[in-house]
Length: 197
Image 1 (cartoon, rainbow, N blue to C red):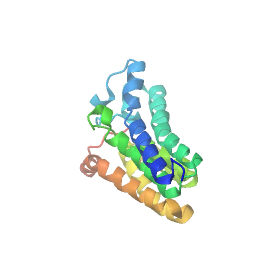
Image 2 (cartoon, rainbow, N blue to C red; image 1 turned 60 degrees about the vertical axis):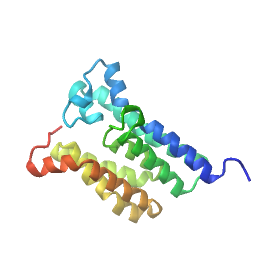
Image 3 (cartoon, rainbow, N blue to C red; image 1 turned 90 degrees about the horizontal axis):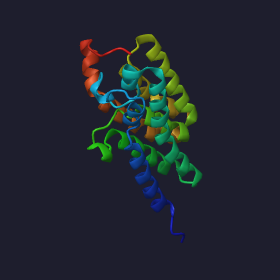
């Protein structure tokens, strides 16, 4: 039996994904651009939206790409290693969990949307592209990042069920995590107080 069989390799990649997810690139990007801490802006979320509020598009895009990459890369490695869809989905969830409750930042992280889309892109590209398109359309229409994230990721399980059914459990769990993580945004949306982009 090889030393790194699928369960062992899955656990190692899950740990790698969690640690990668725990790196909050929004803080690094803001330091590089000499911008204020994004956690002091808007929703207090260390993500691309708040980076945009302080520094505009270039640092926001850098944050978005880096947060997506830390979801994509561990799942890509898992696929390269020949792990099952289930194992790859676990790796993706660990990356998102790392962003939400990062060990390097006292377990106070972000919403995980970009990281979720990065992991999804590695495992289920067609589903993820459609989710991203929905996000873009909702964002274009209403200019509210939280609303776009909730609607887009909320549609994920249905899209996955039709197009890539093996990944339905992943997108179901991602939708649940993202919606729960946006609970305060949902309250503000209901009250008409959610900030626009």
